[in-house]
Image 1: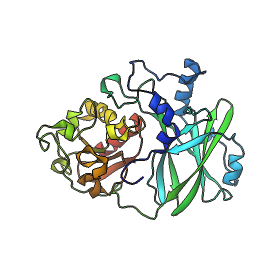
Image 2: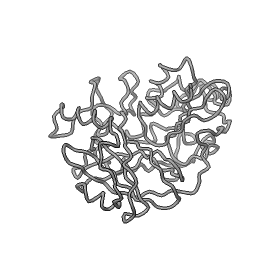
Image 3: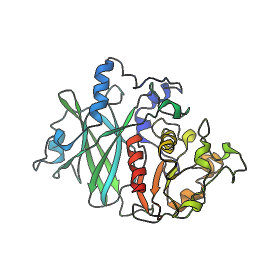
Image 4: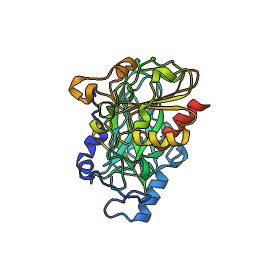
Length: 336
Protein backbone atom coordinates (compact mmCIF):
# COMPACT_ATOMS: atom_id res chain seq x y z
CA UNK A 1 0.00 0.00 0.00
CA UNK A 2 2.92 2.51 0.04
CA UNK A 3 1.90 6.18 -0.03
CA UNK A 4 -1.54 5.49 -1.46
CA UNK A 5 -4.23 3.27 -0.03
CA UNK A 6 -4.70 0.50 -2.56
CA UNK A 7 -7.95 -0.40 -0.92
CA UNK A 8 -8.81 -4.06 -1.53
CA UNK A 9 -12.51 -3.31 -1.28
CA UNK A 10 -12.29 -0.80 -4.10
CA UNK A 11 -10.49 -3.35 -6.25
CA UNK A 12 -13.06 -6.05 -5.55
CA UNK A 13 -15.95 -3.81 -6.56
CA UNK A 14 -14.32 -1.29 -8.88
CA UNK A 15 -17.00 -1.47 -11.52
CA UNK A 16 -19.77 -1.00 -8.99
CA UNK A 17 -18.04 1.91 -7.30
CA UNK A 18 -17.42 3.69 -10.58
CA UNK A 19 -21.03 3.21 -11.58
CA UNK A 20 -22.31 4.76 -8.37
CA UNK A 21 -21.66 8.33 -9.47
CA UNK A 22 -21.79 11.28 -7.06
CA UNK A 23 -25.51 11.81 -6.71
CA UNK A 24 -27.73 10.84 -3.85
CA UNK A 25 -31.07 11.31 -2.18
CA UNK A 26 -32.40 11.91 1.30
CA UNK A 27 -34.02 8.53 1.83
CA UNK A 28 -33.24 6.77 5.09
CA UNK A 29 -31.71 3.55 3.74
CA UNK A 30 -29.52 2.41 0.84
CA UNK A 31 -31.16 0.97 -2.24
CA UNK A 32 -31.24 -2.85 -2.32
CA UNK A 33 -29.28 -4.74 -4.96
CA UNK A 34 -31.16 -6.12 -7.99
CA UNK A 35 -33.56 -8.90 -7.14
CA UNK A 36 -33.73 -8.09 -3.42
CA UNK A 37 -36.80 -6.45 -1.92
CA UNK A 38 -36.46 -3.36 0.26
CA UNK A 39 -37.89 -5.31 3.18
CA UNK A 40 -35.39 -8.15 2.85
CA UNK A 41 -32.49 -5.76 2.32
CA UNK A 42 -33.44 -3.74 5.40
CA UNK A 43 -33.47 -6.99 7.38
CA UNK A 44 -30.00 -7.87 6.03
CA UNK A 45 -28.59 -4.50 7.08
CA UNK A 46 -30.18 -4.70 10.51
CA UNK A 47 -28.94 -8.24 11.05
CA UNK A 48 -25.43 -7.37 9.92
CA UNK A 49 -25.09 -4.83 12.73
CA UNK A 50 -26.07 -7.25 15.50
CA UNK A 51 -23.74 -10.24 15.04
CA UNK A 52 -22.67 -12.16 18.15
CA UNK A 53 -20.42 -15.18 18.64
CA UNK A 54 -23.47 -17.26 19.55
CA UNK A 55 -24.79 -16.80 15.99
CA UNK A 56 -21.98 -18.97 14.58
CA UNK A 57 -20.68 -22.53 14.94
CA UNK A 58 -18.22 -23.16 17.76
CA UNK A 59 -14.87 -24.49 16.59
CA UNK A 60 -14.81 -27.50 18.97
CA UNK A 61 -11.23 -28.30 18.06
CA UNK A 62 -11.81 -28.22 14.31
CA UNK A 63 -9.25 -26.83 11.90
CA UNK A 64 -9.84 -23.69 9.90
CA UNK A 65 -10.29 -25.82 6.78
CA UNK A 66 -12.93 -27.91 8.53
CA UNK A 67 -14.74 -24.74 9.53
CA UNK A 68 -14.57 -23.56 5.92
CA UNK A 69 -16.12 -26.86 4.83
CA UNK A 70 -19.24 -26.03 6.87
CA UNK A 71 -19.92 -22.96 4.69
CA UNK A 72 -20.71 -22.51 1.01
CA UNK A 73 -17.82 -21.13 -1.02
CA UNK A 74 -18.04 -18.26 -3.50
CA UNK A 75 -17.71 -15.02 -1.56
CA UNK A 76 -14.61 -12.81 -1.57
CA UNK A 77 -13.33 -10.63 1.27
CA UNK A 78 -11.46 -7.36 0.95
CA UNK A 79 -9.65 -5.96 3.98
CA UNK A 80 -10.13 -2.30 4.89
CA UNK A 81 -7.35 -2.35 7.48
CA UNK A 82 -3.73 -3.31 6.88
CA UNK A 83 -1.60 -2.77 9.99
CA UNK A 84 -1.53 -5.82 12.26
CA UNK A 85 0.83 -6.59 15.15
CA UNK A 86 0.83 -9.39 17.76
CA UNK A 87 -2.13 -9.00 20.09
CA UNK A 88 -5.74 -7.96 19.57
CA UNK A 89 -6.33 -6.26 16.22
CA UNK A 90 -9.23 -4.51 14.54
CA UNK A 91 -9.92 -6.36 11.29
CA UNK A 92 -12.16 -4.30 9.00
CA UNK A 93 -13.47 -5.73 5.76
CA UNK A 94 -16.20 -5.98 3.15
CA UNK A 95 -17.61 -9.05 1.43
CA UNK A 96 -18.83 -9.48 -2.14
CA UNK A 97 -20.54 -12.41 -3.84
CA UNK A 98 -20.07 -14.05 -7.25
CA UNK A 99 -22.23 -11.33 -8.85
CA UNK A 100 -19.86 -8.64 -7.51
CA UNK A 101 -22.52 -7.35 -5.11
CA UNK A 102 -21.73 -6.46 -1.52
CA UNK A 103 -22.98 -9.02 0.97
CA UNK A 104 -24.78 -7.97 4.16
CA UNK A 105 -25.68 -10.28 7.01
CA UNK A 106 -24.49 -11.46 10.40
CA UNK A 107 -20.76 -12.11 9.98
CA UNK A 108 -17.88 -13.49 12.01
CA UNK A 109 -14.20 -14.23 11.59
CA UNK A 110 -12.20 -17.40 12.24
CA UNK A 111 -8.39 -17.43 12.06
CA UNK A 112 -5.46 -19.84 12.19
CA UNK A 113 -1.79 -19.72 11.27
CA UNK A 114 -2.49 -22.33 8.58
CA UNK A 115 -5.76 -23.80 7.23
CA UNK A 116 -4.77 -27.13 8.75
CA UNK A 117 -4.28 -25.65 12.23
CA UNK A 118 -6.98 -25.49 14.91
CA UNK A 119 -9.28 -22.56 14.26
CA UNK A 120 -9.74 -19.65 16.65
CA UNK A 121 -13.10 -17.89 16.83
CA UNK A 122 -15.77 -17.09 16.04
CA UNK A 123 -15.07 -13.37 16.45
CA UNK A 124 -18.26 -11.42 15.67
CA UNK A 125 -17.94 -8.63 13.10
CA UNK A 126 -20.92 -6.30 13.46
CA UNK A 127 -21.37 -4.01 10.47
CA UNK A 128 -21.21 -0.23 10.85
CA UNK A 129 -22.99 2.26 8.61
CA UNK A 130 -20.97 4.58 6.36
CA UNK A 131 -23.99 6.82 5.79
CA UNK A 132 -24.17 10.16 7.57
CA UNK A 133 -27.23 12.31 7.89
CA UNK A 134 -27.89 14.09 4.54
CA UNK A 135 -26.81 17.49 5.90
CA UNK A 136 -23.24 16.21 6.37
CA UNK A 137 -22.75 14.46 3.03
CA UNK A 138 -20.17 15.68 0.57
CA UNK A 139 -19.64 14.92 -3.09
CA UNK A 140 -17.20 12.24 -1.89
CA UNK A 141 -19.72 10.60 0.43
CA UNK A 142 -21.43 7.31 0.67
CA UNK A 143 -25.00 7.81 -0.57
CA UNK A 144 -28.08 5.64 -0.84
CA UNK A 145 -27.19 4.56 -4.39
CA UNK A 146 -23.64 3.52 -3.41
CA UNK A 147 -22.92 -0.19 -3.69
CA UNK A 148 -21.48 -0.31 -0.17
CA UNK A 149 -23.46 0.87 2.84
CA UNK A 150 -21.69 -0.79 5.77
CA UNK A 151 -18.23 -1.93 6.80
CA UNK A 152 -17.58 -4.97 8.98
CA UNK A 153 -15.06 -4.98 11.84
CA UNK A 154 -14.02 -7.70 14.28
CA UNK A 155 -11.60 -7.70 17.21
CA UNK A 156 -9.28 -10.58 16.45
CA UNK A 157 -6.32 -11.88 18.51
CA UNK A 158 -3.32 -12.51 16.24
CA UNK A 159 -0.78 -13.88 18.65
CA UNK A 160 2.40 -14.05 16.58
CA UNK A 161 4.03 -12.27 13.66
CA UNK A 162 3.79 -13.93 10.24
CA UNK A 163 1.07 -14.97 7.82
CA UNK A 164 -2.38 -15.82 9.11
CA UNK A 165 -5.27 -17.52 7.33
CA UNK A 166 -8.68 -15.90 7.71
CA UNK A 167 -12.18 -17.24 7.15
CA UNK A 168 -15.09 -14.79 7.07
CA UNK A 169 -18.47 -16.48 7.50
CA UNK A 170 -21.71 -14.66 6.72
CA UNK A 171 -25.27 -15.80 7.35
CA UNK A 172 -27.43 -15.39 4.25
CA UNK A 173 -30.87 -16.67 5.08
CA UNK A 174 -30.47 -20.19 6.44
CA UNK A 175 -27.09 -20.64 4.75
CA UNK A 176 -23.55 -19.94 5.86
CA UNK A 177 -21.29 -18.55 3.15
CA UNK A 178 -17.54 -18.35 3.50
CA UNK A 179 -14.72 -16.21 2.16
CA UNK A 180 -11.06 -17.12 2.70
CA UNK A 181 -8.10 -14.76 2.74
CA UNK A 182 -4.65 -14.21 4.22
CA UNK A 183 -3.07 -11.35 6.12
CA UNK A 184 0.39 -10.55 7.44
CA UNK A 185 1.19 -9.67 11.03
CA UNK A 186 4.40 -7.71 11.55
CA UNK A 187 6.39 -7.82 14.77
CA UNK A 188 5.85 -4.11 15.43
CA UNK A 189 4.92 -0.77 13.86
CA UNK A 190 5.96 2.76 14.69
CA UNK A 191 2.43 4.16 14.66
CA UNK A 192 1.39 5.47 18.10
CA UNK A 193 -1.22 3.30 19.75
CA UNK A 194 -3.76 3.51 22.56
CA UNK A 195 -1.98 4.56 25.76
CA UNK A 196 0.82 6.36 23.92
CA UNK A 197 1.41 10.08 23.62
CA UNK A 198 1.06 11.24 20.00
CA UNK A 199 3.68 13.36 18.23
CA UNK A 200 3.01 17.05 18.86
CA UNK A 201 2.57 17.86 15.17
CA UNK A 202 1.46 21.10 13.57
CA UNK A 203 -1.60 20.50 11.39
CA UNK A 204 -2.79 22.65 8.50
CA UNK A 205 -5.32 25.37 9.32
CA UNK A 206 -7.18 28.11 7.50
CA UNK A 207 -4.72 30.56 9.03
CA UNK A 208 -1.60 28.62 7.98
CA UNK A 209 -3.01 28.35 4.45
CA UNK A 210 -3.73 32.11 4.35
CA UNK A 211 -7.39 31.34 3.79
CA UNK A 212 -6.78 29.02 0.80
CA UNK A 213 -8.98 26.10 1.83
CA UNK A 214 -8.38 24.27 -1.45
CA UNK A 215 -4.74 23.87 -0.43
CA UNK A 216 -5.58 21.98 2.76
CA UNK A 217 -8.90 20.25 2.05
CA UNK A 218 -9.96 18.03 -0.89
CA UNK A 219 -13.49 17.57 0.42
CA UNK A 220 -16.21 19.26 -1.64
CA UNK A 221 -17.66 21.37 -0.22
CA UNK A 222 -14.79 22.30 2.11
CA UNK A 223 -14.97 21.26 5.77
CA UNK A 224 -13.81 24.62 7.12
CA UNK A 225 -14.92 23.71 10.64
CA UNK A 226 -12.28 20.96 10.75
CA UNK A 227 -9.41 23.32 9.85
CA UNK A 228 -9.66 26.06 12.45
CA UNK A 229 -7.49 24.43 15.14
CA UNK A 230 -3.83 23.42 15.09
CA UNK A 231 -3.28 20.06 16.79
CA UNK A 232 -0.13 21.19 18.63
CA UNK A 233 -2.04 24.06 20.23
CA UNK A 234 -4.71 21.87 21.86
CA UNK A 235 -3.21 18.42 22.50
CA UNK A 236 -2.84 17.90 26.24
CA UNK A 237 -5.22 20.77 26.95
CA UNK A 238 -8.52 19.32 25.75
CA UNK A 239 -9.75 16.14 24.03
CA UNK A 240 -9.00 15.94 20.29
CA UNK A 241 -10.17 13.85 17.34
CA UNK A 242 -7.43 13.93 14.70
CA UNK A 243 -8.41 12.49 11.32
CA UNK A 244 -5.93 11.84 8.51
CA UNK A 245 -7.85 11.47 5.24
CA UNK A 246 -8.02 12.72 1.67
CA UNK A 247 -11.61 12.56 0.42
CA UNK A 248 -10.87 13.42 -3.20
CA UNK A 249 -7.61 11.57 -3.77
CA UNK A 250 -8.82 8.42 -2.06
CA UNK A 251 -11.35 8.19 -4.92
CA UNK A 252 -13.41 5.56 -3.15
CA UNK A 253 -16.72 5.65 -1.35
CA UNK A 254 -15.17 3.11 1.00
CA UNK A 255 -12.84 5.61 2.69
CA UNK A 256 -14.27 8.96 1.62
CA UNK A 257 -17.17 9.20 4.10
CA UNK A 258 -14.98 9.49 7.21
CA UNK A 259 -14.61 13.27 6.93
CA UNK A 260 -18.38 13.59 6.64
CA UNK A 261 -18.72 11.46 9.76
CA UNK A 262 -16.25 13.78 11.53
CA UNK A 263 -18.47 16.75 10.74
CA UNK A 264 -21.50 14.91 12.08
CA UNK A 265 -19.61 14.01 15.27
CA UNK A 266 -18.46 17.61 15.65
CA UNK A 267 -22.05 18.82 15.74
CA UNK A 268 -22.73 16.50 18.67
CA UNK A 269 -19.44 16.70 20.58
CA UNK A 270 -17.74 19.88 19.31
CA UNK A 271 -18.35 21.78 22.54
CA UNK A 272 -16.34 19.14 24.42
CA UNK A 273 -13.44 18.35 22.09
CA UNK A 274 -11.55 19.64 19.05
CA UNK A 275 -12.11 18.00 15.68
CA UNK A 276 -9.25 18.27 13.17
CA UNK A 277 -8.93 16.99 9.60
CA UNK A 278 -5.45 16.68 8.10
CA UNK A 279 -4.98 16.12 4.35
CA UNK A 280 -2.52 13.43 3.27
CA UNK A 281 -0.42 14.53 0.29
CA UNK A 282 1.82 17.58 -0.10
CA UNK A 283 0.08 20.17 -2.27
CA UNK A 284 -2.67 17.55 -2.68
CA UNK A 285 -0.54 15.74 -5.24
CA UNK A 286 0.17 12.05 -4.72
CA UNK A 287 3.48 12.32 -6.60
CA UNK A 288 4.82 14.76 -3.99
CA UNK A 289 4.53 12.29 -1.13
CA UNK A 290 3.08 12.54 2.34
CA UNK A 291 2.64 15.69 4.40
CA UNK A 292 4.84 16.08 7.47
CA UNK A 293 2.18 15.17 10.10
CA UNK A 294 1.67 11.72 8.54
CA UNK A 295 5.40 11.09 8.50
CA UNK A 296 5.63 12.07 12.16
CA UNK A 297 2.89 9.54 13.01
CA UNK A 298 4.57 6.82 10.91
CA UNK A 299 1.57 6.52 8.59
CA UNK A 300 1.75 5.06 5.08
CA UNK A 301 -1.97 4.56 4.52
CA UNK A 302 -5.20 6.48 5.08
CA UNK A 303 -7.63 7.15 6.57
CA UNK A 304 -6.54 7.04 10.23
CA UNK A 305 -8.39 8.40 13.25
CA UNK A 306 -6.74 9.11 16.60
CA UNK A 307 -8.73 10.39 19.55
CA UNK A 308 -6.71 11.86 22.42
CA UNK A 309 -7.95 12.57 25.93
CA UNK A 310 -7.52 15.89 27.73
CA UNK A 311 -4.26 14.75 29.32
CA UNK A 312 -2.70 14.04 25.93
CA UNK A 313 -2.93 10.22 25.80
CA UNK A 314 -4.31 8.33 22.81
CA UNK A 315 -7.68 6.85 23.74
CA UNK A 316 -8.61 5.18 20.44
CA UNK A 317 -6.98 4.39 17.09
CA UNK A 318 -8.84 3.38 13.92
CA UNK A 319 -7.35 2.53 10.54
CA UNK A 320 -9.05 2.15 7.19
CA UNK A 321 -12.78 2.29 6.77
CA UNK A 322 -14.90 2.89 9.85
CA UNK A 323 -18.47 3.95 10.26
CA UNK A 324 -20.58 6.17 12.44
CA UNK A 325 -20.73 3.88 15.47
CA UNK A 326 -16.99 3.20 15.66
CA UNK A 327 -16.19 6.88 15.21
CA UNK A 328 -18.59 7.74 18.04
CA UNK A 329 -17.07 5.08 20.30
CA UNK A 330 -13.60 6.51 19.63
CA UNK A 331 -14.82 9.99 20.54
CA UNK A 332 -16.46 8.76 23.73
CA UNK A 333 -13.25 6.93 24.73
CA UNK A 334 -11.41 10.27 24.73
CA UNK A 335 -14.13 11.99 26.75
CA UNK A 336 -14.17 9.53 29.66
